[in-house]
Amino acid sequence: MDVTAKTLDGKEVFKAQKIYMPQSTSSRGEDKMVYGPFRKVGMFRDTSLQPNQTKVETFEIVIPFVDIEKEGKKVREFPKEINIDVELWYLPAGAKGEVGKDQFLFNKTTKKVTFK
Image 1 (cartoon, rainbow, N blue to C red):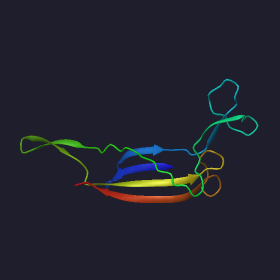
Image 2: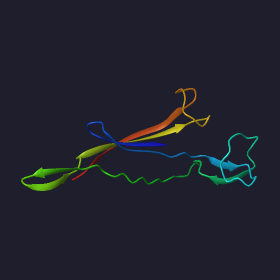
Image 3: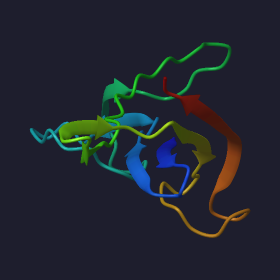
C-alpha cells in the first residue's frame, strides 16, 4: 500500500509504504526474513490481508507550515487543503515492475482534506 499526501500546488509532503505478506525465516538461528519456498522453514509474522476482514491503518501526517511576517507579527500559515492518495497494489514477484504484468493496482482512493 502506498500513501502520498500533496498540497494543492503538487508539493509532496508525506509518503509511506506498507507491505502485507507472510514473513518467513530459515529457522537456523537467523532472525531475518527469507524469500523462496525452498528456504522457508518457519513463519514468524503474518501481515497479509485476509479475506472478509477489515484492516485499519493509521498514518500520522505532519502538515507543513510557513512562518511569515504579517503586520509586524510572526504568523504561521498552513495549507488550506491537501490531497491524500492511497493505492493498494498486488505484486506477485514482491517488487514493482511492469503494470499489468508484474504489478496490479487493486484499488486507488483520493481524498481532499480541508483545514479550517
